[in-house]
Length: 537
Image 1 (cartoon, helix red, strand yellow):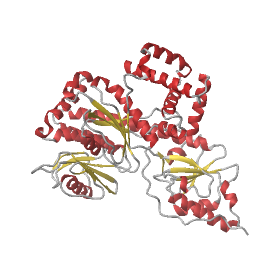
Image 2 (cartoon, rainbow, N blue to C red):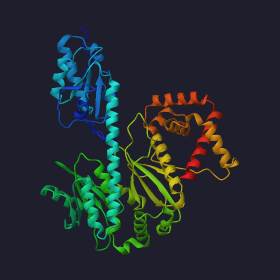
Image 3 (cartoon, helix red, strand yellow):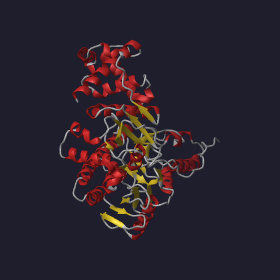
Image 4 (tube, rainbow, N blue to C red):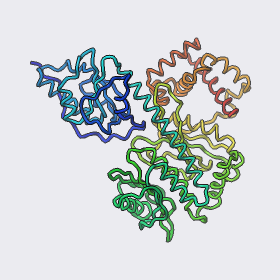
């Protein structure tokens, strides 16, 4: 008798970082009548799906990141011999390993291999607390995957809209007569929780939102002491002069604290403390923006100096409709560097901490740092900052940075695009920091007039003019030297999609993209279009 495939013992769940994509409630998928999904085992409340993975392997654990709905048609069950006892043992181990890998749910496809979901799998999933979903014969796995990405895209759009609205509300509140109180009220409304300014001894200097229970209030006081005094803790993150932020988790509440005023003789840091829903990641980003604003508002005028006063005046001028060039003199520095930053999976570093490290209060959430892809969910929100051009920008632990060259204020829109491109390259290359390098004045492109270059580029790339995804793919693919994997990472799509698009581009252009001369000419054309866009922006 042949023994069944080995069943390794289930280990403890892996400590996987939270995915950057917003979750999709399993109940939302079950409610779609076009899919016909039916849950037949496991917990039914609070199940969230971040992505979908299909595997017919006996041990898919090495290929799971956590948060997936794992789809299988049960082909691997054919390898099990030894009758019902062997199958029960195998499925028990399979369910245990899937749970240990952090999968959110298991989807079992009916047909072409099985007519029903094995009863032993139903029992194993109930035993190990793994939601089990029956996928009917008429529903292909790609339909389930497409439904998840569609829901993720919609959730991301709602999230980005919320971040944008919160940022505008906080900036407007900062310009009101009582700015600190106004920012606390706006913050409480947008994080849907409690916000407070606390001294290290726990004294409140303002609060807003529903009053928390005593346990949360006590924990908030401890965090204020961590960032405002000499304390520390596992949740603290070091900033200039000590922990600049700290976090704590209690049942039903996630606490975050941010140091707002610098330490000095006879003075301790005031802290912004926020208590929000632990299942609401955008609240953390919104709180970081508020912390930067409150650092400007609560800091003593003598500490802020002319530069910070100018920054605040520039903010007010922009809010009432002034053009960037008109507020440039208030900013002080003649040249500015744009930085785009994205958190790595292993960090929960705050926006306030990054602003401190970069030495600037001019930092805000950025909604789109990657080109939109039609077949992938939008990327997570990043941060972008304006840093005086004379300051050296170095890699920051826990962050991936794209950095523009220093430019005057009127060229900031182009520098913003350059920083976004640099960030894409950094993410694709798994580099902590990439700088945009502007071509020198004596480059080959300078030998051709701008009008001639533009006309040639438009004629050469005319077959792609109505397809921005193809232009974006060609641009990224050429900039990354034709590397399929890096291009896929940069665009947030599958490498096979990159190959399909490049093949389509070669057909439309009727050219050989393996030819170095062709690649060079296409690159010059794309750069000419970039320069033209920068000129007319």
